[in-house]
Length: 294
Length: 234
Image 1: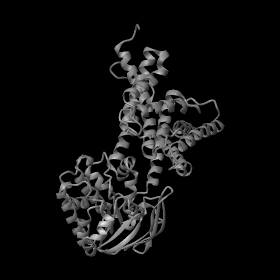
Image 2: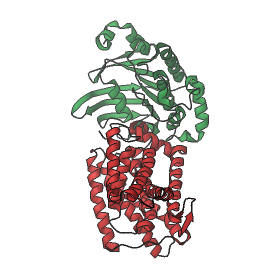
Image 3: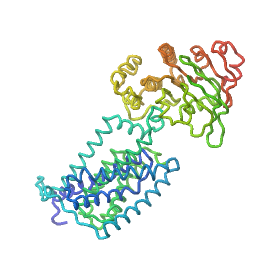
Image 4: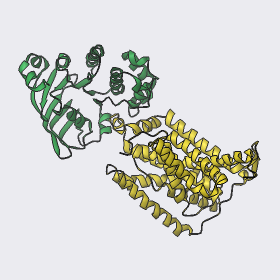
């Protein structure tokens, strides 16, 4: 354990937060979609990957990273709207397993289509010029881009929070997650709300994929492992809870990051150990409501 | 105003409403009475659009609504206060009231309408920013009624509003119904407290085993001990 200084641990903690920020963005969409639509979206990782590929495509067309930050969630979110409207909507009212199987299959279709269109090899993704290099954060130098990822996630969360708390549509979403029936009686076409929620969730997943691209490169399979980790985050945070997704996302990021520093061979297992411990103590997760799945 | 003709409803394969027919005229208070499980709640739910499998005809202001989704019936001016009140957990009193306006053309006047509601319901006025489900049952019932009324519906359907509520609040509530009627709101009321309900109603339908078995003016029914005994005693 020589050379393990507090500063190093501190830096690793920040790396964990950057990783956690990506988890949070993925998990928040998963949680929103599950909380409103009771759809366990197994295609969420595929939308994440699509976000990175749409970014690659736009950059090749001559766009820049900042444009991508806006365009990617809109483009992939629109694909999400189409998927909800034409594939998922016919399955409402048939139980939780139908949309689960559909999105599971859909994720394979999307990955295969990307392989056909872009090849199996994958692409490197350059860190945007403005965000290259490292900055001194007091305990040492930390990659500027990772700080940017943390900040970007913060901005998205703040925006989402303002949307949910301050707008009528946000009020409908919060109420509809708890009691869709009363919302219908009060004149709201809930099918339209579900459509928008699915679009928002997939758009944020795509943004997460784009943000992760400079950290890990872009390959068709990039959505697989991270989807599993995002599910761990939503389970630990409590299915359907947004606050839970945020806290658990950051926690899981830090746990992965610190365990890869201390016990690298356990890094992959550590989050499942964390999930097991949380579930033993609190089966509904941090902020979950018991019985939501039944 | 509301005309229900041969309304049938099913829960799965069980046929719970059989040829229910009733009318509610503009400005009336009409009451549905009958035992628990007679089909009163299902009748209201079918009219508002919460029962999946229905047949027959429901006309509201001359237009057929049974084939329309629930949210469109709200748009036509029908409001419904369910028996379980359905105050949304996690939302404040004010947010529950705002929810009553999200789909209403009156949404622009939200602040004004919340003020108006606060004057009608002083108990809610003091608690606008409180989490709604921390209030007492009676206060929650008032909120459920206020939420349905805030959009100025033409007809409001109330399911067992007095259930489990302190008598003093029940009196307050029925006084409110009289005022609502005086303001021109039409009311279709389901109520276990038959005497109280008949005391404010114009007419009543007696429902038993999923169908209408008797129909009379409220004063006639109030005097008819035999019918009350046969269909309403628990």
